[in-house]
Image 1 (tube, rainbow, N blue to C red):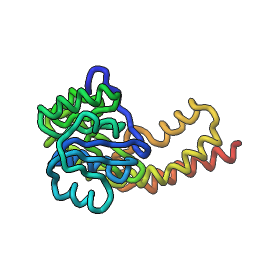
Image 2: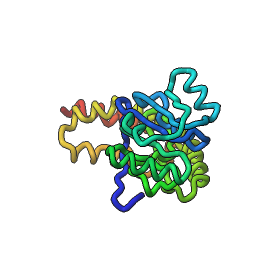
Image 3: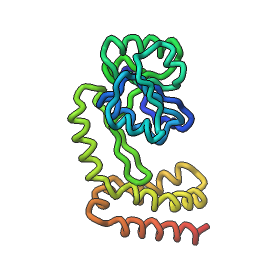
Image 4: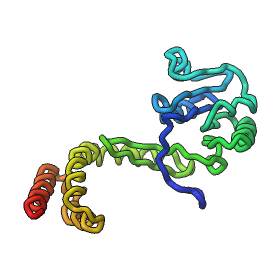
Length: 214
């Protein structure tokens, strides 16, 4: 991460995304925002078949032409996925407008990274090498997906129990102590051993005791 970087999750439901470039890198970047951003606009003379398909399906807008500085005015987030010369122009235009820039050519030049991610139920994890080694990131992401495929669903099952604990233990310190007790350091290993229902049963039993005491 850049020295002043802060990891965060960005809700793009009301954000407009402009992508300059329409090659394989652009496709990879756009997959992260397709169906989530308010509007997706692509600027490029030629486009990969996937981008053409998205355009024909009305999922994004593709302008088959070269980039112009005014194009960034349509976006809150700008993805630069063109060559180095064009990327320099995109960077200047994006920073002049105050838009967040994701630079696929040189990640350090951007303000926003779109890291590889994996999703499991209510959990989302991200992995990035800051552009240093994308292949290793892909392998690590795939490994995480395999290791923790069931944990997201389990987290969703525990969410109502967390709410119940909040009702029974109004103090934050009490709740933290409760979860440290019933989700200790070996919890992930127990889940991998197939003990999810046992863990859930222990938590339910503990909640029952709290309810009886209140």
